[in-house]
Length: 443
Image (cartoon, rainbow, N blue to C red; front, side, top):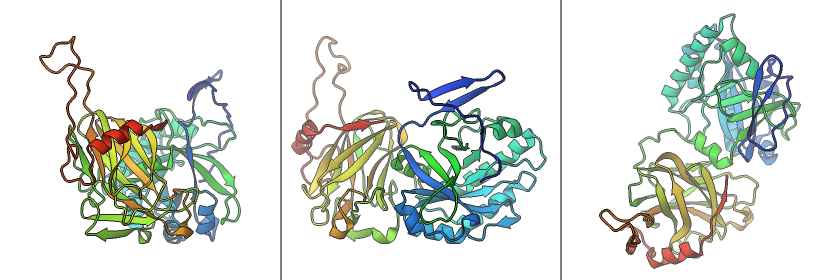
């Protein structure tokens, strides 16, 4: 994607605000900084030639976008090789198509769909590369883009990503409001924060150079940033609506097991083992830990809550398989990531991760990666089993019909919380664990 989208206008990031605007004498620019951590990635086509994906992964690259075609007229000869080898190296990948508005948008979309086949749960959504007009006016270009996006979304169940630049989108597409689709912004600059196209409040990806240097690739390559943590990247990769749909967590709480539809195992699946006749729900999964900078395999429990509220969260560990002493769970609740590290080998049963404020709805999860810091050479087993949420009653409000001047009664806890299927004694042990736990929060 090196076709003239570099922007000469450089804008410095405001030191006091994540969003800042800079105004010239003729136009206004919207400069949007990242929200916190970022993840390193690349995008490639046959121009990159032979790629050593193992070296690319070792250089800190965690995701890659791979070109399928230029319209329908040219299919990238290296797509399948890159697609297969990037996955084998443990790099999260997605496919992009250089879009030709003068061609049939559905035919272009179907070509991409035929090449990617059935997407894995941890594949990134497809990308439409919007940087050509085909001599069409802005309204026609916008209509063709929307046809492609709607068709691919219906076929994959994932919301496609739009790649474009500030000036092209404004002048050649006419600023259609497609902010519901994640933005991959193209701007080659040394500025700390990009100047994004109108209508989008923020960017999901930023292609900030076309001349990056990455081990395993000869010559320059496009280098990108994802605006968020690796766990958030994987949340984007996951399907918008899992199939079959996840059962919502009810008012009092609930349980998600590794065998449920709400659980996703990611990374090279050959390294994740499934064991039956053990664990909380009669099975569990495990993989070996690593001391790598980035994770290769992971487990993610996707959560949909019927009601907002404060919930105690626990993880089930079976000591006959669990050996990691520093399993780092990331609880993504109401837009906030909180890390909770436990010794999986310490308890044969439920272990507390802490209490968290959840929003109603989906897009919340518990994520556990294999990069615990414990070396792979030690063959330490990391277990993915069940997680449990238990509602913490709100004692700040009086019960219906009660005296507002009297404190609300505290409901006694029952052994096992709201779920009767758990083992390991979650009653008093949970209460003591919660008193001892201090969550480390970061936004």
